[in-house]
Image (cartoon, rainbow, N blue to C red; front, side, top):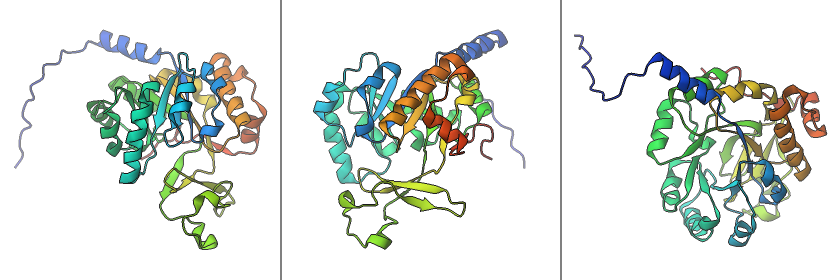
Length: 308
């Protein structure tokens, strides 16, 4: 037995082809801003603020004195919350936000559990990559959560980015540089060697180590605020060659993810992306970026592939 689909009532006005075309062009001509996410607060330089529209800093390392000392000018300061937190840690995060919220512009949340804390303060809320936003339905759901901006899934390709922004307008960011986390482990893989008892602060494997695959690629492992082991991709995303195309995807900002870079590498990367946005392929590659390309230690992610 086949049932006829009932007619749906709708109060929406019919959008003409001309109006849709104007809306699409306005999305593709949006000014594109640059933002940066710092996993390690010690690598953050206040000198970089003049080049960035928004900066994401780990709330686990922020304190009132540091937040107060940031002369941000026109740059927005967002505190990022780790993806996986215990209930005790969430209580600490809530208390931290209570003390520093007046020095912030917003909070980046990584899952729905963080929303209740973020909503308590008069701040913008940004949905991080942990939400894995793939389509307009996810965007609408997040807007219903009072989320004001969001990082789109790195698994979206160029065509999918364009289609999403045309279908549902919003403040979108997309990662164009950096390592992406692949896995978060509660049990440390190095404990097999160290036989330790959660003494992560003094562990020699805390930084500078990782897991090697059959192709001799090393996947770095770093600790988060709760001493979870975060496994990162061996290859860094590098999408400068696609920036001219990305500009027409209706994004608000492109995002740099700094995980294990030195202060010098961070500065070179920021300056290179600024230069590339202005000059395109005429921008001169700094030594650090040049080595990434020559040694094939970078990836274009899903920009041309997408996911099935």
